[in-house]
Picture (tube, rainbow, N blue to C red):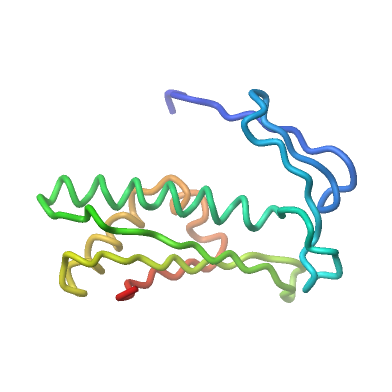
Length: 139
């Protein structure tokens, strides 16, 4: 792989109840576990950060495949729900990507979303490791 960019961040403190900061300080956040996991929920958490990155990356992939197909996805959006839970082998993640493409019929939007799932770097990184559902919705 030819590296085009490398993001750098450091986590300090007590993990989920710590702090994260990127080397350029554009992200500089206090962390806290969500209330559902016994925390105070006052700070951000790793799942929110992962959801944000995955949603943005997948939306870029959707726009790329749509452009290649000559399709209009100008008013599209991608939401990511990242869940954490316990499984037989410990803690794990699952993702639902909710894709909205108001300018296209559902079947065409789903086809583009499926193509985006093949080219998105986050999808490639998670493939075979966690469950990722790609769902096209109307809103």
